[in-house]
Image (cartoon, rainbow, N blue to C red; front, side, top):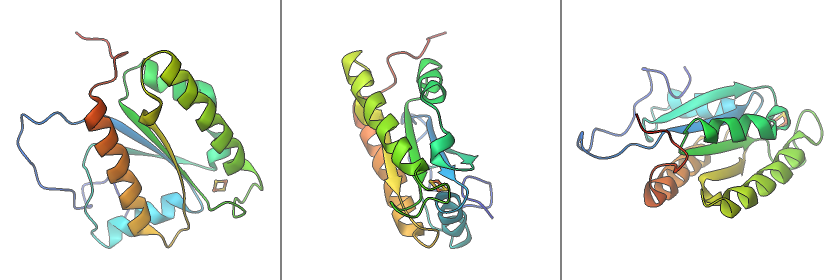
Length: 153
Ligand code: FES
């Protein structure tokens, strides 16, 4: 069972009028995705508005993927990969960290807010940490408000 499916228990509804940011979580197959799965299996609760994207390694998440997501109006992104030194592709998570730092800087420069992008390193057993990082990005993005790049219809 993976977090983000209907089998996962999410926070109860807190009122339909409350704005729910759209959050993506790129989760590495070996650690973060397993941690998200474990969180789902343990029925740990976290915000319902997080979409899990299963990726082989955070090093495969390119800058253009992240920028395109923000351009399309995603409000926040979590990149969750293996612990430093634990990447199955050796340095994928280190490359992802550098990309994250660069994009955060770019988002600050264009007034979108670099805090909308968060990177976390965790092991497959760290389901509570996964949930904490999800709650962190959701809280930060809620405080920032909607992505200013979001096209209003
Ligand atoms: Fe997990 Fe590279 S395999 S971050």
